Length: 339
Image 1 (cartoon, rainbow, N blue to C red):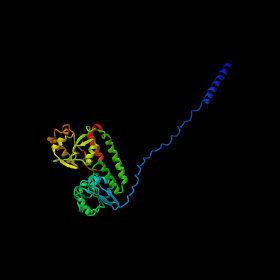
Image 2 (cartoon, one colour; image 1 turned 45 degrees about the horizontal axis):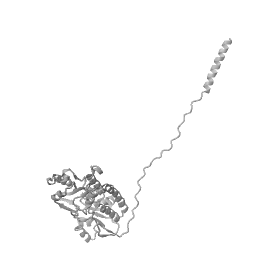
Image 3 (cartoon, rainbow, N blue to C red; image 1 turned 135 degrees about the vertical axis):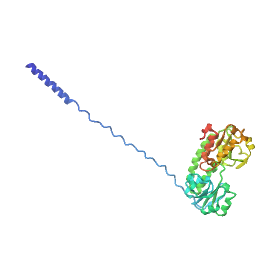
Image 4 (tube, rainbow, N blue to C red; image 1 turned 90 degrees about the vertical axis):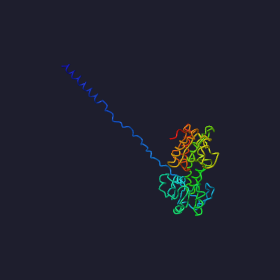
């Protein structure tokens, strides 16, 4: 009996201990939530800062154009006629297209320029059409100096003439157009951008030795062969791109040259231009000219056609594109190959 009692006490104690152990078992920890993440800062895209407002010049304003003519601008122009594709491109680049009321048959860039009224071919404006659109400013080119310019002046029209003889002149013409149209700051920004690109090329070609500068023939027509001499922005462009215009020392502006003269100059590179599809025509005829077969450029297969003649023949905002392309054609070892 005593042993049974002891056994019961043992069970009771054991069960008591188990119960106590169960009671003493800590409850599972409550779920701990991580501290809240700091709020994510949303980057709101910042709009480009607005360009500083333009300050209109005081009118009447007197400026000097590329022919050295003093031209008085009575008031801020509202109706502009452009008689050169390059001037049309400048107007668009400065945001003045809404004031453009007349262009030439060749003003095709940007695309919107094609819809503007045509008042001229290239060399010969239709004075009746010019007068009919009532321009208060006409942007002409040096090609009009002897013909259309006197007639327009006799009609009392305000005419500024651009005549680019270097890339610096091109940049100054952009500034001039901006100045007379109340867009001086826009013109300055554009010129700064173009100057940076031009200097990026010149910084790499300025140290070339005379032997490293390739002799270049620039061809704008093939029958007969027309090329450029000094006092042209093409000549300046070739130099800045690291070449030497083979006819720079022979004459100014453009001229027909003989095959014999080309053979004597022995150009190392021939660059073909030409508006529209004429570039292909000129290129193919130069390549097939057997009498030039021994010229260095022909022997070494260095006859190139500019991808778009307007890049190099229009002294306007795309002139830096033309310079960069010619630099790649002349010195791929420096600038990489052209597309």
